[in-house]
Amino acid sequence: MRRENEFLYMRLYHTLKEQIMTGLVKPGDYLLPENELCEFYKMSRNSVRKALEQLQNDGLVIKRPGLGTMVPADLVISPSDRNVLRILTPYPAHFVDNGLPAIIDAFSKRYPHVDVKVLSLPALNFWKSFQSSSEMGLSPDIVMVSDLQLADSDVLAPFSDVTTALEDRLHTIYPKLLNRFRHEGQLIAAPLTFTPVFLAYNPQLFANDNISRPTEAWTLDDFLNAAEGLTHVSNGMPVRYGFSVYPYISRWPVLALQNGGAKEGGGLKENSLRTALTLLQDMLYRRRIATMYPESDANPFLYEKAAMTLTTTFEMSGWKDRSLSFTPEVAPLPFGPLKATLLQANALMIPAEASSPELAREFIRVALDPGVQQAMYERSSFLSVIREVNQAACTESYLRALNIEDPLMNNNFFIHDLFNEAEIAELKSEFALFWLGLESAEAAATACAQIR
Image 1 (cartoon, rainbow, N blue to C red):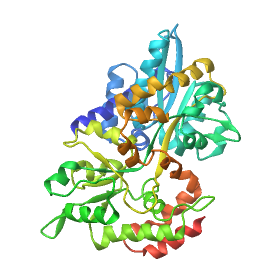
Image 2 (image 1 turned 180 degrees about the vertical axis):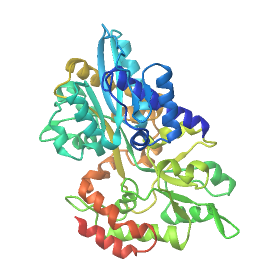
Image 3 (image 1 turned 135 degrees about the vertical axis):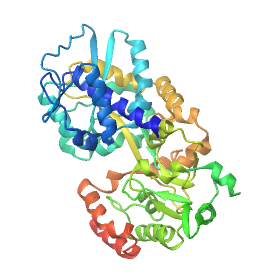
Image 4 (image 1 turned 180 degrees about the horizontal axis):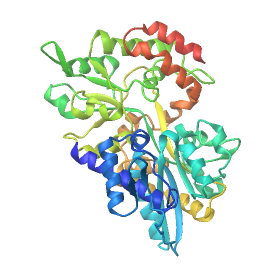
């Protein structure tokens, strides 16, 4: 845990330093208060204070008792005489730490005269921060976003069509990904990497309990039997569960998609909801072979307190910093007869006011070069948006387990294919009692089905 905390405070240090060096936070300006930095960047107060202390040691900030932390009014930032490509990203974003560097390295080799600067803004208020930075004169050349951040079409107007940047590469990219980033006939973002939601398991725990490891043919009964066998109880208290689940919209709909699927035009079929929620309630409260966790860092799977979990390649990339004592493996989703799952993706956008649009388009072309996408996968295991790269780098069984081997990819959905932002907020409210075990699966399914 100590190593992880050190890594976090250094990430915040570099993020705030770049904000100062690029002029987003100008001499004489105050940084956000410590409590807001903790909230926006999802860090402890200790990590925030260590990051601010490092900035102070560098002479980039000063503490003013009773007022806050300020960039010295007399701080002089010497302008660079080199070309600069500025990339704006949300924070936190595992891809920025583990995947994007491979692309930046490839771009820098081809364009050694260009400095690439990555500036991160809090994901919690990303578009508000983006607008504020634009009003202060900071014009990034590229903005990296997730599919979740493009739910509001109002934010798309200030961005350019990236079709010309892709030219002859469009046909190599999964159509499912391209369609997610189309808006009013334009491709407003270039998909960069993606992930399905899939099932990860701890092979050591399976071996220790003499439980057969998952195969491509395993069924729901196989999964439930394994989860029961992997659940341990001591003195009447569970000390390990067979399965852990994140009780939010980014995970649990996978069970519904596999048990009846989505309605035409969005939403989930009521019968699929009922089946999925009954299964969840059975695992959580009747058989007690599964548990929930409130935040990604609190997943019992990471502490070997759960043997299986639903996750993504984005989330798994962050596990590398935790020095796990085991290597997670991927199992096919076994929750129902339909082969379907949820997708998430990261993409690159070019603001209409970009100062270097030509360099931005070239960066996108480099990012989507098959060789660069392959290097990205080899370095970080992030999936390529190019079908042929994944097919060359991964086994067929692995791609089938992820549910992205042709034609399975066409069965998958982005969460905003199913629900809009208002509906997601309503779902969160409707499911509060269900996750506490105080509402029946039938009632929760009926309420959910009525939302759309």
